[in-house]
Every structure is written in structure tokens, then in C-alpha cells.
Length: 144
Image 1: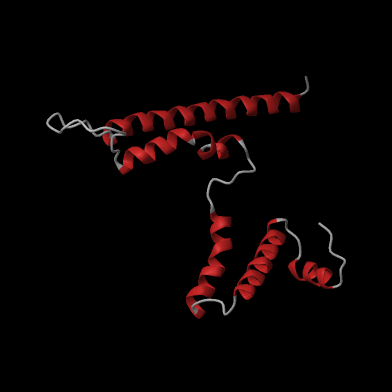
Image 2: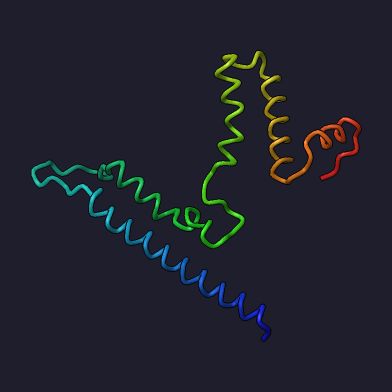
């Protein structure tokens, strides 16, 4: 085995250990939270049928447990960003337009604007030149 492979194997091992530690810490935090958000039943309350009411914290904690893999995906997959900034930036321009003018005049105008914004956002994420791509579309020469 050459040095590059040994170095890569070492980095992978360290990354796996870090992932394990972070996931373990995540579980510990949820276990500690469960002690806080769990509402013990009132012994004086009449017995009710159906599902027991849960606090907002308990519902959130259950969703954190249920979606643990998706929430922590950024740990194992470098393609997944830690934050959600790109998605928020994509929505920001539409929200600004809505605040400035109140709304689009027609549904068709809104749909066209959304389609264009989506296309431009995709071009930027793929590190393509926006103006060149828009010109290529107008001339029918654009290819993905």
C-alpha cells in the first residue's frame, strides 16, 4: 500500500470516529432532553381515551429522533452543506419582490419570474456564466 492510500485510510478512520462521536453526542442530548420535555401524567386527572397529549418539545424531540439520519447527513456526506443558506437565498429575492410591490400582477407573471429565478440560481450553483447561458437559450444553443 502506498503512502497516499495509507493517508486516505487514516483520514477515513478519523472521520468515522468523529462521526460516531457526534452521533453519540446527538443521542445523549436527545436523552437528556427527553427528561425535560416529558410531561408525567397527572394522577388526579380522569382517565382519557385515545392518544395522550404531548408537549411541543416532546413532538420536536420525536422528530429529531425519527429524522436523525437526514439531520446528520452533512457529517458523512461532503456534498451536503451544514446550513441551508442556498435554499434561503433562493427564496429571498421572491420575498423582497413581494414586499416591495405587494405581489405579481398575474399568476403567469409570477410563474415566469419563478422559472427564470430558478434557472439562474441553478446556473450559479453549477458555476456557469449566467449571461452567456441566457444568450445561448435565446439562440437555442444551450445544453445542460
